[in-house]
Image (tube, rainbow, N blue to C red; front, side, top):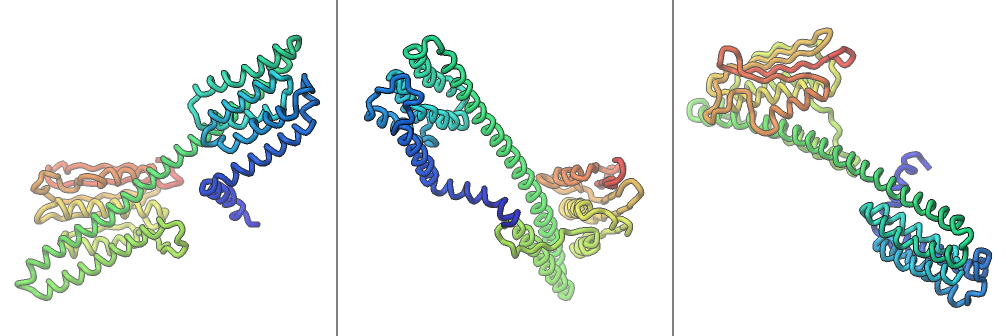
Length: 389
């Protein structure tokens, strides 16, 4: 049996129990019922204070203490109440059936699934049988029977609380991981869809104006729209494919990196935004994750300029790689859009998404207007992974 198979075994058992809980409940109940009836055959007399208790009463009490376990997970408080009644009669008669200790099982489930105040009610159910047996049959050594039993039940309750706390912590970690994954997916979807739709819109507008005067340019715009659309679909299929964990054949193609910057910039130019690029080849030493961050920040900045830069806007992209950090600067000469959004700024996931990406690699992101009053600048600094930030 491989380690992977062994690791999956608990999950499969939990899945089976979730789908067919009655199987485990019936098995556990049958085992403890058999043990209680075996004890009722005569073993109970070794602990009894009154060995002359009728056999029919012993069998009845044994069944009353074991059979309710079948419902312990659905109605643990009711089960404990029934068992406490049988234990009280067992203690009053002097039988002191060992099956009375089965009360620890529903007590564990109460501590596991119910509010802490429910344990006070459990104490009110468990204590009367102990006190009755001690006063009626062990008045001189009551503490030898009551105190150890209470300690045992207290440890069971503490175990239930501990397991409950660990489950709550695990569930919290799962929720946080799910929230982080949703945010990551939202960033990727925003970058893929937002950028490509902006490029397609620019190409469509340019093609419409060129259709009447220059049909060849219009055809080129349509070709570029088709290329951009197919690229967007490919990226979306890759992103959605890796989300299907059960699909082992999902495409695992690499995420965009610095090698994809030139096609990105060329696509933006085709969409109608003049871009001047100065890219340091040494920056290819960045890790794949850091390269993805650089790519997405440049993509987002250029997309925002496409959407909000206005007519005549130009952009400049510079990427330098030094001994301590990689620096990315994207500036434009945009004048803003009609709705008052400054060039380079976007609503929604844009700027927050860039900041989150930078923070993943201890980087910093600065966004703001140029000192000249026209245009916008996005500046990203990513420290080298083996250098202090």
